[in-house]
Image (cartoon, rainbow, N blue to C red; front, top):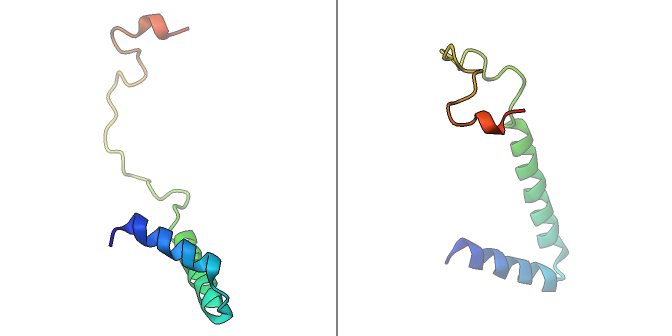
Length: 70
């Protein structure tokens, strides 16, 4: 079963179910997923030392783009 189809079927089931325990379990799974995503978010300084070289002409306007500059 494709992911989109599975999502749609689950949404439809959620809308029509009255089983409190299952809905609570889904809410718990959602909270756990949210918590995992919060823990894996980027933090300040995570990319320190990633850039090893920047060309000396980095800040110069590329050839042909002069007309777009103020």
